[in-house]
Length: 366
Image (cartoon, rainbow, N blue to C red; front, side, top):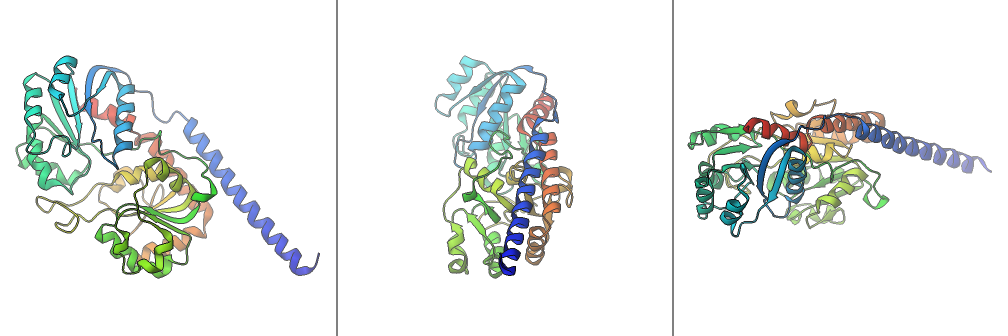
C-alpha cells in the first residue's frame, strides 16, 4: 500500500470509528434514559373525562398524547365528536369535558352546545395551545367555559380581562410515544433540520443566512417556503409540504442539529391577535425535538429557562449570525452536542411528558 493510500485508509478508519462511537454512545445513553424511572406512575384519579380533540393536521400528536395520558391518569376517558355532543355528554355524564383549542370544533358562532353541557352540571375546560396567535378569536369563546387553560404565559392576564374567572398557565408537553430517541435510517440523516410553516419571521431569518446554509446538508420542510428570496439557492433542500409527526421524529433523530424558530408575536402578517400580547412560552417543537435526543438551537422565549437550562439541556441563539456560529461550532464539537442533547432528553422525560402534564392539570382542577 502506497503512502497516499495508507493515509486515506487511516483517515477513513478514524472517521468510521468516530461515527460508530458517537452512534453507540447515543444509543446507550438513550436506552439508559428511557429505562430509568424518571417520572413516577401517576395515581389514577376516580374521574370520568370527556375529551374533545382539535382534530386537525398538526395537532394529531398532541391529541393522541393527551388521550393516552388521560387513560393513565383517570378511571374513565371518552373521546367525543362535535356532532351530537350534548347527547353524548348527557349519556356519559362526565365529571369534566376538556376541549383542545376549540376554534375549529366550537367557533364563536357555534357555542350553544357548550352552554347546554354546562347546564347539565358538567365542568367545561378549554386548553388553548396555539396562543397568542389566534387571540382575536379565542377571547370570544373563552368566557363560555368554566375553566380556561393556556400554554402561553403571556395570555393569562388577557383572558382574565375578558371576564374568565379561572385561568391557569399549563405548558405543553411531548407525546413520547411519537417523539422518542431511536436510530433513524440514513435517508433521514442531515446536519441541520427545520420543520415548520414558513411564517414571515422564519423566512427573513433563513434568507439572511441562506448562503451559509447552502453549504450544509440541510433539510427544511413545510408550507410556503417558496416565499424565500433565496428559494432557488435552497430549493433542493426544501420539501414544500407538511411532515406528519411520525416522519418528523425520524428527521429529528437523524439530524445533528434541529433549529426551532417561534412565530412572531406581532399583530398582522401571519397572526390574528386581539391585542399586542407578548409570546413568552415555548412551542410544542421545543419538547418534541428534545425528546428525540437531538441538539436543538432555539430562539429565546422568556419562559424557556423554566422548562430547560439554556447551554446545558438546550442551546439558544439571539440572532441569525449567532445561529450560524453555533451551527458551525456544534457540528465540530460532537461530544458537547451529544451531551447537551442527552440532558435535554433526560429533562423532557422527567418533567415534560404529556402524562406528567395531565397529572398536573387534573390535580389543579380537583
